[in-house]
Length: 403
Image: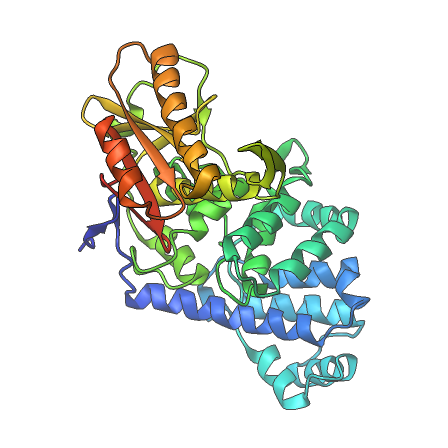
């Protein structure tokens, strides 16, 4: 029976049925193997193309759940044997050789690893040799991506974006006359190396989910998938997200998402660099761009599953925030003191100017976005001008209207 929908996208909650749980357990076993190998390797070894290829191949499967995945286990063990330069004649001999090669891996632990059934993505055989060559060519960049994803970060989504961008910049993998995204072959290993379990596995299973949320298989899509993890859809980590993408039926994009965009040179609101820059406000230099961009990013994160955001000379235009009307937003980083009051006045002028100049039909409402709740005077001032007010309390978007 389909599960109940949840969230602004109308996506179902994760069922966590018996079959999905079996898939997730297999991914966790794979992650344990890959992480143990990574942690046991020295700095030089982590940059070795052959070692990187081994880690990536450990994330692949041979399709089948035939024989309980034992064909994949044996194939993987042959790859381990090739890497450490021994003949794979038995599990016991391979475990002994593996323990000798990696000093921190005890023999009992190696025995357990060699016997463990692993594998996540049924990666196409036609692309496997080409992917090995690709890793060899880009080993320095891939080693850097592996190193960065294997660390914990305060801002996990920035980490996900950074790592995904590193991989995306390398270009597609070519085999004969076919091309494929590097995410398909590499993200199983990236996901396994991530201790925060937020880097998503991207493959054929996630294509339908990406289409449903209006994203592509790129760095933005990677972050968007990562943000589906959480209480809204009851998806606890990237491994459950992969099972969710495979086992659930997702709705087609809603008709509302196809509402015509107002005429004008508007573009989707993209991720803003939060690197600080210097601007002139209230006759003195203040570092504001970093905070301004962070504010826009927070707004984008808060509404991305429910509304489309556009930008031009203005900060953001929320398309169809209510029937027949859009919402024009100007973001300001302060509302207190001389500098803050100057920013509020500037926002008022910008909103009326942008609406008059770019949106002559006057079917657009106005709002100011602030970092925090302002004082009563600012609230009264904006209310008297029919300008709505938005602010953040922690990560929650609050205000005189609800988005």
